[in-house]
Length: 64
Image (tube, rainbow, N blue to C red; front, side, top):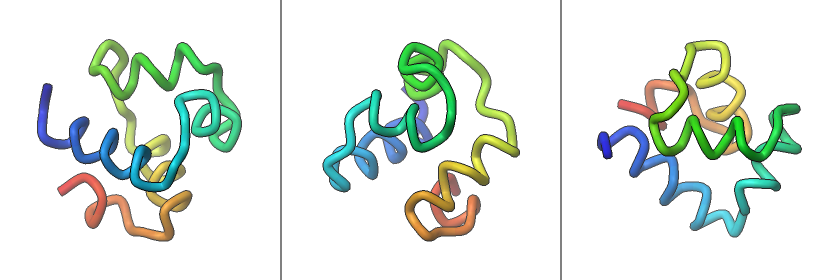
């Protein structure tokens, strides 16, 4: 798994959030979020922005 996705998973776990929690906050399905985190679905920039905002970060701070 890419470092980006590992970092995303660790950030989610550290925040105490489940896949379902993240999906609800992002307005997507649990399986859709799971696929993003496991590199089964492409992470587009607009979704990266939404995810970063959940953690009060800029996308570059979270993903790079």
